[in-house]
Length: 412
Ligand code: AAL
Image (cartoon, rainbow, N blue to C red):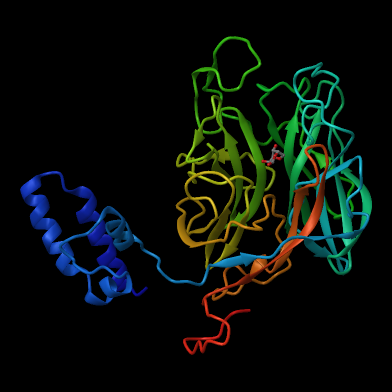
């Protein structure tokens, strides 16, 4: 969209949103309606500028109406070698992939045995598939056949903030150092437990890894539980969007700083728009090891689940999956904070826990190329998950079999 058109859309939005006096409002709306171009009305199929439904008004407020962010995911395919499904073993939440020493590297949560849940002895049981995990890693020449290399980061000693489980890891390489950030839980793992985010670093992707002595991120401390029942929905006060949990951390170097994106869970979580009330936040540091300061603008999404962020077009893009009214959308921000919807993704086959392929160069004119292929987990059962490979293609047109599509041929 050219700048003039953007300015016009902005003015229209202001006019439509800001008027509360009936006479002025009619006057302003009339002027605004006249400002919308015939071409734009024609594109959206709006017959009469005098009669704009609420949906038509919203469509006229869309700032970005190009079609280069659409992706269609194929069904996921199983991996070979050590990462093929293994009964009795949980391998889930793969990190992004990086390429080192001529091989792909991936890190992930690994545990064994079935999940007992919260009804029994939470001191000794395994409450979730991601409970009692360590972080392991694997390498591959081709991204299909993987060799499990061993553990990278283990749970801490009894009494440490990470003594119960370390899981849902992400990798960042910066200036020849490697950083793993991950979720950590201290025992006992109750439904009201507040988790933290830990960090480990090494000068080699094969370790050894040095762990931070303290978490680098904590949930907000401003919610109040109601009563003492192990129930995470009962609260006196909900607190910030991340008052209960800080999940799915991912650090990106950006504009000379380090942006730690994460998913927040709120005490007293609700179901909204048919999904869990999940939102993302960002905390920013001058150095990879922190301190990370939460942005005053948090939350920076109103939807989503696992964090999937990458750099493109001079800003940061995010794939919003699973929960909330804006699920299954690609979003982009110039600053890592103010995200706008850029395109939709077909819900079918959409991987739930994406590990991006960070070896891909992302050209400005194909900002979602990083999704050509990558890894995610699938639920083989509630007890056991395995890592599989996804692939997707960009679609910018929709033609019938045999139909001529002379607009352009950029189906890849
Ligand atoms: C996932 C992620 C986090 C949660 C659990 C394991 O969907 O959001 O990683 O802790 O489930």
